[in-house]
Length: 163
Image 1 (tube, helix red, strand yellow):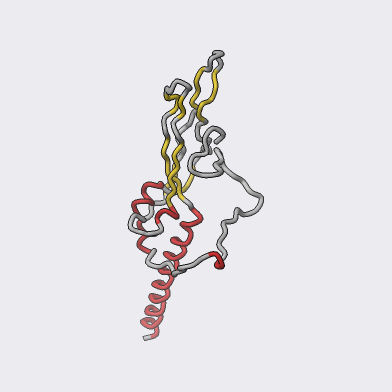
Image 2 (tube, helix red, strand yellow):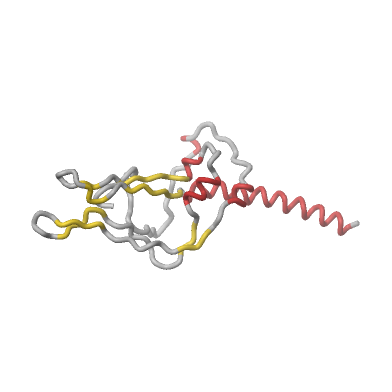
């Protein structure tokens, strides 16, 4: 966003395409109070992956003193076509009792835009996002728990077949 970055130092009003991976610092030398994440199978079962299309967005404009139309707030530049993902509010509900909820669900607020006389040109905008990279640990633990159950069932099945 060019007019207001909201709560984050960098926001891009479109997709980011990198020729290599984006990297999040994860060096253990910077971490303390490390504990293995567990109990995520039920969380994974409760998550609802969805397909969706983004609602069309428009810039909010105003007329300046010279009679020229000016953009006072850029619309979100969402990609076109069918997408896959989650609904942030639903993920928030599934993870509501987790102390690490705020590492997955992020809130952003774009301040209201007012003219010199204090008239509101664009309202405050609150919206949620998902730190999808942080959700990978939850999904990985859920898969690990499922694999333990599958392996135990395979052993039981092979024992029954051998009898």
